[in-house]
Image (tube, rainbow, N blue to C red):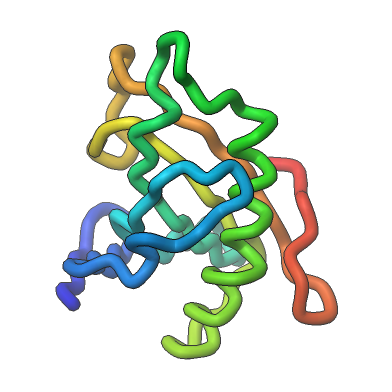
Amino acid sequence: MKVLLRFSLIAILVLSGPASGTEVPSGQKISLHEVLVDAQGDKTWLRFRFLAPQIARGETQIPFDLAGDDMLHLCDTFVLPYMDEYALAADKIVISMMDRITEFGQPDPDATQYFESFRTENGVCIWDDF
């Protein structure tokens, strides 16, 4: 694991994504790209960025409504155990899927990206507003 410091973000770069091959309800293939710990004022956001090539635009695209169910599933079955394992806490969890690797915070009009935010309550993920 490599730790990077950039702007106000501390990025925990996962070199061999433990989420590779993780099953999600839609059946798409996903892999963890990176986890970012982001200070937003007095709040801590954890950003889990997944590579999900099947959300790419086209006839076979996994649409947002199916991917949204995948993100909730990932939050409950992958993110919460990951947070326990690495002793991480967050006020907000953001899960993003991208059809290609993009640099965080940099626009890429050719990329398809989906985002959802969550909070934890009683050990489960609850959809939350941005």
